Length: 109
Image (spheres, helix red, strand yellow):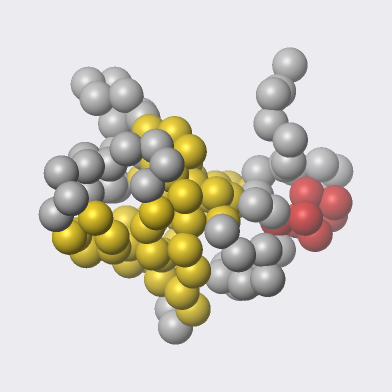
């Protein structure tokens, strides 16, 4: 059974992320968004070491928003470089895809 509270929509969106890494050093790098939901997203291609609870900025096109890291793909696995993030601003629509409409249109994603 799926433990997720919201449906996911799979996408491939180029983004830029920045913030402080796990060693309190500033970073900025390109990444991509693999999936989105109403409250968060899964980033992939993240090369810096991060920790759950940290805040990162994400930019897609001209839109920017802050996200909290909620999970990290384990080092040495196929999920290495993936990061689950949760939006800190419910008001900001960062993506040009509405996950709730997509899930409804496709029969719950």
